[in-house]
Image (tube, rainbow, N blue to C red; front, side, top):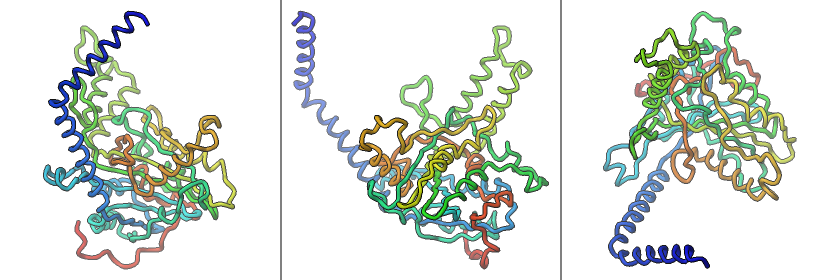
Length: 408
């Protein structure tokens, strides 16, 4: 053994000895930190386990002709970023409320859902009725609990994907405004609604097949690292302001301290305009999942898996942000999962995360991305007559009127 190696061992043992010598001093701080983390974890689990969830189905009338702007106003009501006061956080484990916006095709029959906790039921009903008076809001059984998936021997087999955005959160995706769905006087047959692509795909589900689509949303938190600091955080709007400044800096010269708008490219002008509009609205931390289910005995359709994987490409437009697959339940090559040892564990975890609508907290915490109310309304709105998928369930008219005492 070389002298240098012996010297390294001596130094290492010296540090260990020093640490043991002062163990009595630093151990209480270390153990106190562990105790605090354990207590916080217990409070969180207790708080989450006591939440009472319900699933609301929104049934759409045949004659609906509202712009996605109406849905944006409904979604504004879901912006609940507060985690409560310090007492509620430290003694009850309270965290910010979250919701799930969902579209499901049960053997071709398409349904729209909002999953929420019980205290928000009347509030959400009031918001929906205020914008869609002829719709019906009904509390229903959870479709995700109708499938029991535990292992490879289950009756249903899933293929699932989680999605994220390609660029920074402040850069928006193309929205219903960019597709002209906010304009009045445009004939239904001339409208281009990217959500129609999703509904057409979901409408292809046959007997023994299901499609699920889920967007978990929570009022955006300060979680982005602030440049120039060690631990400080900032929100996504500050990120957007920094991105605008970065674009403008590229056009500055030694003689011109301020970026000239005339010197900017059309693409950068459009990008600044889009970011400015994006950060002017409320933002949500989001997570998106989608599933294709096939019952045993039903032919597995590979084309539907490919359609599901690319289901959000319809929302891609120009130099805007766009979606990509972050995680899936399939591997590209057989040697990545020899004898399917990993795939079943991944499927179970993603299914349980979907069923529990878990995204923001353990055990299903995943890095979210930000979408504002306009972007969310683009992904989740009630389509007009342009969407004439035969299996898309519409109602003739809503039965009765909403209760007069609903809060507004």
